[in-house]
Each structure stands twice: as C-alpha cells, then as structure tokens.
Image 1 (cartoon, helix red, strand yellow):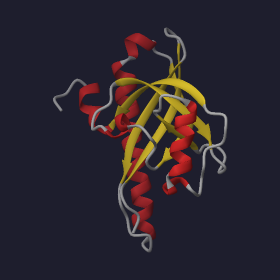
Image 2 (cartoon, one colour):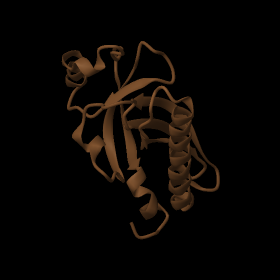
Image 3 (cartoon, rainbow, N blue to C red):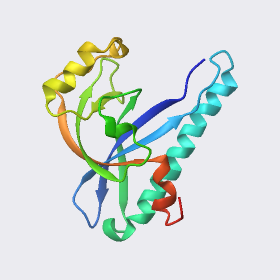
Length: 161
C-alpha cells in the first residue's frame, strides 16, 4: 500500500511586471494499492490535476502583480517529509527561507527544508533513517519562496474556504 504523501514542487516565477521569484506548492498524492496499476495511475493523475488547479488559482490571483505573461518553470520536486514544521501546516500563503539540495536521483528530484543553517539542514538528513536512500548532495542553496497548499486554493480564488 502506498500511503498518502506530500509532494512539494518548487517553481521559478518569471513575469513581465515583477522580479524573478520562487513558488513552493504542496499537494497530497492520494494513497493507492501498489498491486493495482489503475489506482496508482489515478493517484498520480489526481496529484497532477490538483497541482494544475492550484497553480492556475495562484496565477489568476496575482495577474495584476505579474502581468499577463507569467511563466512557472519547475525547479525540482521533493517527495516525502522534509524538515521544517511550517511545511506541514494546513495553509501556506507565507514566504519561507528554504534550503534546497540535489539528490543522488538527479533532476527533477530535490530535497528541501526549513532550518536555521545549512549544517542543521544536512544534519536532519544524516540522523533520520527516513532519508537513507536519497540523501541530499552538498552544497545546499538557500532560496526564498512563497509557499501555498491545496487548502489555500479557495482563498486564492476569492471563495470562502
């Protein structure tokens, strides 16, 4: 059984009316039975659909800020449970300082997290067996990103949550 899992997608924002920025999106991939391929395919399709809806809501809300031409380019994907309590809150709509590192799996896979220092970011991965198979590679890059979750979609659309 594959359990429900948070998927973090980090994007570069390129817009006509604003400086380049970054956006971190968290979507929950639904649980599915590993032995049932249509369930797995459906879970990945739901994840993609949810992400597309959230990105569309974000871009619509910020059209005046970014202008008509706003491109989101995928920087990397982090599957699992990265360090940083704020990453598990129901709602985002907050700007975060993140550490981002490549993994041994190559693009587009990254590890990211919230930690006071790069050393503390890496220490979390070294001491937690959850990360044993895909440790982040040094050095990490420090970035600032605006963080949104599925729970923010209604608010981004101007609807009651």
